[in-house]
Image (cartoon, rainbow, N blue to C red; front, side):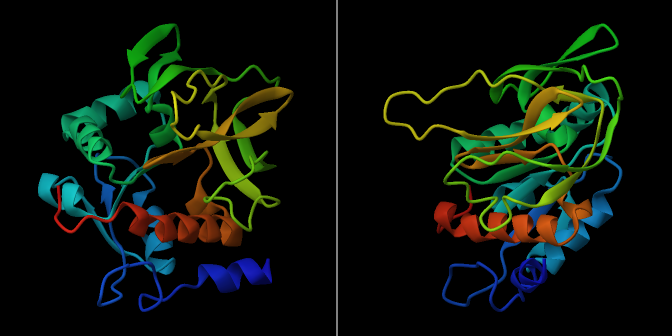
Length: 241
């Protein structure tokens, strides 16, 4: 874990900026009324990013990375994101190959639908499939857990054997999207709670997401956020979308 802490302590001068000035990456955390966002902002800043909490369209489109946080209910989170135009921001950024990171319910809303309390709510439909209630004996799933990381993961580089912090009662429990033609297949990381296997993270080109909270996952979470920031130069554009 000492190595993880060292790797996670990225200064703005050495953070991935990928331009002549070696600037820190600019990240917008989408402000849609979600709780717990300040800890996300602080964690990204500690990882070396220049972070702003906003729903401003131009800033969100121009940022090197957009983070979509979410806690609580699927339906409420999806409604809040749509209320500030976040669904269109995500769609626009991904259409231009610009990075987006979803956290917790921010992962869940990327799927087609969420089923809560007998009601079905439309998500942002970036991935096929439904978010449903965990079938474990003890719900919610709250606490630290290990994850099953696929080979070639950039997000989990150096942290695949670590534990991450989860707080949720619902999850995506099937992955239904496959690569088409020469496309690189999405990398899906899994976790298990009480014998119920569910998606813990997805790396799908510019769109990544985690069911766990990296900002609450100590040195492992900090290293994962640093890894995400390091991927941003791959998608850099000279002109903002």
